[in-house]
Each structure stands twice: as structure tokens, then as C-alpha cells.
Image (cartoon, rainbow, N blue to C red; front, side):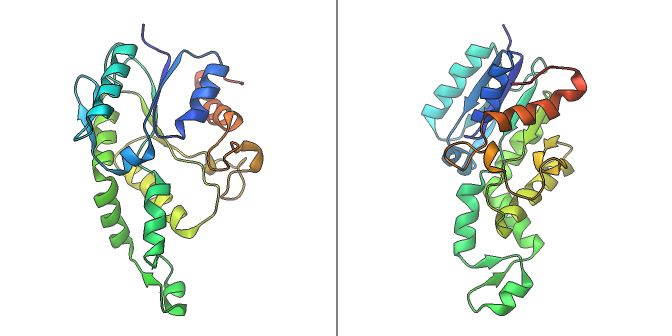
Length: 225
């Protein structure tokens, strides 16, 4: 039997899945380490929905999950929430440590900062995330897909730059992206402490419930956790 909801992506899936189960939804989750997504090797697969180019254990896990849900992860029968395409913790720190900055003022004021243009950022994202963007574009044509932008726990300039640019690039392809921080109830650019998991990096079940309530409010579903 098909689930009510499929949640797929990295560790940010956990809060969404916990909230979905608490709300009584028959939700199934498939999560891979951000390291696997960061490799930029996950691509479309007609039978399973996706596959890794060179990670057999990952493909075994994907095929087993597809058996559990009765077919492709991305099918027209089940809504899909995806935390795919960002994985900022793997990408932004090396970029920043190299001295790159999007601030002209910072580059002028520092001998160690190197200004990067918008075109440079887009080229960098294509190199690091292009295959994932193509996966999401392919999935978008096959299912009711919503990409969930990740919560931010520190208002770091390059983190926000990459997050906002990825969101814009996905939306330019017609992909539905839900960004909780675009809601007026989340003032500022950092996740409030009450919505953070114990590790301080991810959202907790209350954060997940907030996201689900806002996502499905128009459908009249009661998702209060």
C-alpha cells in the first residue's frame, strides 16, 4: 500500500518524518548522509526514482526502499517532500575557508578575502550540485514534489547566499520550494532555540510540525503534532 507521504533527502528529513508520524500520517522516509548527496552522483532511475552512479550500498538501500513503498520514490500517487540540493554544511565551509566572499566591501577591506561574482557562484553551484538539480527537475515532472529549504542556525553571509541562490535556481526551473523563513512568523534569519534539535544544527519535531502545517494548510489536513 502506498504511503500518504514520502520524505527523502538528508538529515533534515528527521524532523519532518517525526512530525508526520506524530500527526498520524502513514509517512515513509528515505535519508542518506549529506556526504552522499554532496558527491553530486545521485541521478534519476525509472524504476526506483533515483540511483547513485558509483555507490552500490546506496543503490541497495534505494532499491529496498522502493520495494517498501511499492514503486518509484517519485511517482504521481504520493506527495514527496525533499531535502535535496542544498547540503550547505558540506559546501559552504570549504568555500569560506578559501577566502571567497560575496561582499565587495569585505574583499576591499581584507588582504585575504577574494570577491566572487554571481556568475562565479552559479558556476560553482552547477559543479557541486548540478546533478542534484537535474534529479529534482526530472522528479518534478513525475510527482507532486516540494523541496524544503533547510533551517539556518547561524546567519552567515555565504550560507545565506548559497541557500537563497539554490532556492532561486530551483524555482526558475518551476520546482516548488518551500522556505519556512519566508513566513512572517519566523522573524530574523536564524532558527529559534525552541525549534532546534538537541544537536543545535537541525530542526526538532516542533519545527517539523510547523513546516507541515504551513505546507498542507490549504488542503484542510490537521497536522498538529
